[in-house]
Image (cartoon, rainbow, N blue to C red):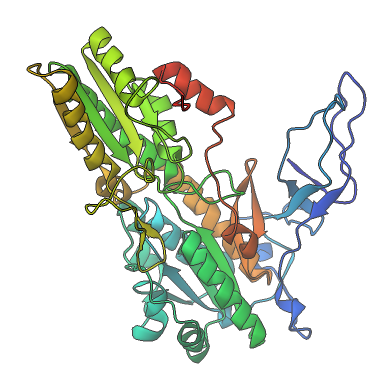
Length: 467
């Protein structure tokens, strides 16, 4: 939903005219916040032969997107204090960088995700073709690449087929975040646009980089593109690579179903990505329809006793002779003991918790349960973990298109002088969001909404409410 921040009204409904009051436009950082003498330039898209700008082509400062578009018009429920709105993404009439003077850097951080190479490709092509930028560099090995290696010069010819490749050609890594060394490296190389592709940890690093650049009063636009195959970044509709991950997960679930169906009392167990959120497991379950139980981090479960997982599987095996179980990697972490019986939480280089293998643990517990409760009866568990197969594949067609729109929208924002922002779709329209807000906002599965109810209606699984 796109609207003017000064005059926001909805279409008339049967109950009368609906007006949306108290709109709060989230302030977007801009280079002029700390550099007052910057000059503007006409947008070169005015003369681009592939565009025919008309009055509606360029986005105005009053063109915004509402975060929430569902409203109760009955007045039975109290309205929120204010409605959040964000600046709409897209080209502006005046820009703050001349293409010939831009030195842009692109860096990929954290784990792999389908579409990373597409985003890189489209950033390069967009900068080159839309704004005439000729100095574009790829920073290898994540944040540490700013001070431990030399950037790679990029051009459209070099990246023309990168969208067909999985992973990231620029290479990535976790950790290595040294703020002074990173910003010194950016400054020493004369970079003035920075494009960061990363997840929640990388976005927190981007906040620090943006604030340090602002403190030094440098004319450097810092822009982020959220990357998380788990879809756990908040505010935006979805992250790139998520749809590809759900599509690829079908292969693992189908294989598990075939294995389970081909055995006596067979259980197919599939572990899918999802450290803090179960979006992939949820959507893969809804898409497949052969899943008997879906376990996610947002919904606690237990194994033994009335209403537990084993009681449910026992009934399902008696009825159907087989069962398929999908579990997100972050599910059940509070009930899985370490080898020494403790629940000590380890951290990786990015500060994320190192999760115990819920799939391996469930496989072991399933076998123990069956041998105890059904001795001398046949039983088979086939455990499939497709994590690295899923995250390493190229993006599908839908994600490739999404990556293109993300990259080009982000470029428009940086050229306009916005900084410390992330680009992403909100209610189907691309918006610019302050990175500090993105870095602290999560996107958990809401187990009280219709989507989770739909999962349970398909699987008929228990809610695992404690006795």
